[in-house]
Length: 220
Ligand code: ATP
Ligand code: MG
Image (cartoon, rainbow, N blue to C red; front, side):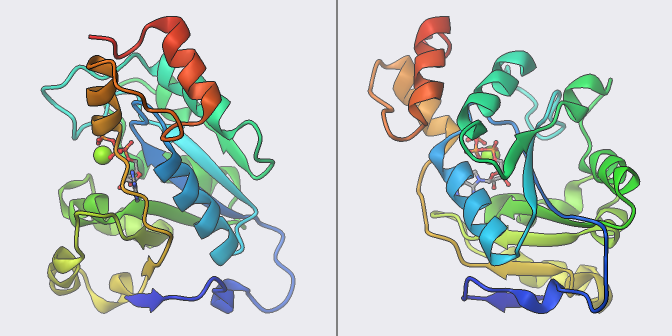
């Protein structure tokens, strides 16, 4: 496991010419996408010299049982609106189009096959990385990409020590803890505020707020 404070992680520059892209993958429910997601993606993009960060709204998240998730097309539309002004960001429909539960390993395999010379960086917050052992085939997943995990207010990295013991050192070395500007925003809090008629201005981009108001999402 490596820890980096600086904004320049040049160790991923491979010697010689490599044609593939350095691609960041930011998976999530994005219900709705918020400024926390965007700050993390942008700072990791710069720190790891990524060519692009692709946001991947999950269609049927395996980890969100019991809560009705907003329809994928709304979440996709909001992700598009939120990322439209950044030339290095895009949004993928891969999990929306794929039937069944949305497993990260299937998604990472898809991006690896799309650019076999590329290097993939799966970006998660501290809460998500703590749960990685409950994901489908975590070892296979980590083998295919680098993991960049960022701090999230209210969560710690204690479980990473657990991970160290359960994964071999080869895999653990692919998990990088990276410091980004802490932004204490969650979609849960945004949904809560909206259901009570409380402002979320600046917590989500204006375009996303306009979309939420136009569609009446999260009002109840
Ligand atoms: P919810 O409250 O519905 O779970 P969320 O805010 O956690 O929503 P997700 O779509 O679940 O958003 O998260 C997608 C990814 O972004 C996860 O890896 C999560 O850890 C990370 N993430 C979300 N918000 C933040 C934040 N404020 N700081 C750092 N990472 C974050
Ligand atoms: Mg979450």
